[in-house]
Length: 606
Image 1 (cartoon, rainbow, N blue to C red):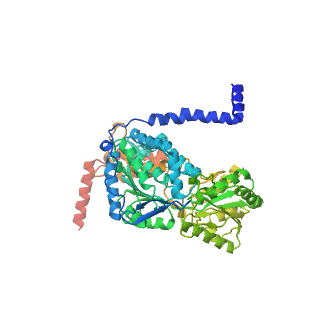
Image 2: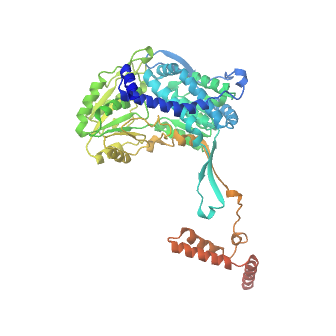
Image 3: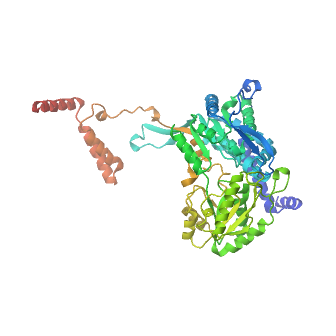
């Protein structure tokens, strides 16, 4: 058998180990992942909605114009209109009406819808990537990874594990109730989730959170960024058709466009929960708006992630990942590696190898068919912000070793910013603590772990981190000292791909999480339930029933020693004393007589 594998490997021009790994992955995929997806696919159980007419009967916003352009070429894209506050309210009402029916579906039906969406994405990968490139300026490869693959994995995970996360969960009960009561927690659809997403991944940001909301039995109203509004109609039309083909009201998902006024209206529209992804400044406004209606919120507010390279790290491995961490999507990711903390012993070698790699890369318009490693930035104002941070850093002693310049006219597209390497950065510089959200590798030197901890925790953010070291115990130790909601050992940004993990930060990076069971349960309302165990309807003991026995206080006190005693002896004595008091407890008649006599004596004294 091994001889045959060796012959095949030689014919294919690959090593035997590579072929064996491929066969193993194929085996796991076919026998583990594929059956789950195969069984989830099923024909619609209802006729098509309105016979297959999924078109909207209302306008997509009537407010201000939202012009749209391709950042990589400057070409004009189909624009949109802003939704007025009244139109936002109506969108929420439509989604709410549709959600009443959808909330009654079982998980078999919800899985089938997820598979319908997954199948559509598989068949339209090129189209999705191209539209993302045109709207954001990213490369086709970046879009395929960040828009297509992550969304497919989200849908696969929901189908494979989502039902399990929302099943009733049994909880333990106190010893005193162990034989008479059982307890559990259940999760129910909330209604309509308000979702406000940024522009950096226009397809995934919408589909990922919509899928979670739908799987939890909710409807959704999604407000997209004014910088990614061209594809809003297209995405909504796709979802309307997929939902309608299964026989459900296509109004279940509403995708709205607009500026700040539209987002504020969504927060106060009556949605049952709000998920906001954006800046801390706007996040505070969302919280303020939601507070007036006590609407719960989940906030993901960006980061200033540390990328730590220890002197015992596999440097070549770390270099490849560092370039991706700093420059993928032109650094326009909330979990971009924004600070590269490189230990003193390898600092110079790290910079040398980074520069060698970068000189072989190319920047341009991938949507035009060019082979490009990096694309354009989406917002001209953000490019200006990056320029400002670099200027401040260089004025205080930082060195630009590569790039550092913006291409394009201020306020116009295309807006390219060169991949930039900024060395010798320290905490006096704004770029060391302020979120860059651009293609800048900010490199900081460190010597001791105590110094590293101070550097890593010097920003108000706490989203993610990466630690590179061959010494795993050291890497874990360093990770524990960095205050973040996520951490990766010897890798970068893997958490979003592992959908079982919650995605979220601490401090100024927000609170709450999406993805994982936390994300599904976060889009559900929780109910704690108790019931009788084995049909035993246990009443309170006679001495505790009204009117309460005069011995009740002493009996309860001894019961506490029995259950919570500090030693076996104390627990045994508590039990004996409790039984003795119960047996000697006066009857209800005697208690009432004694109480009446005491009352009469009090009246006589008065």
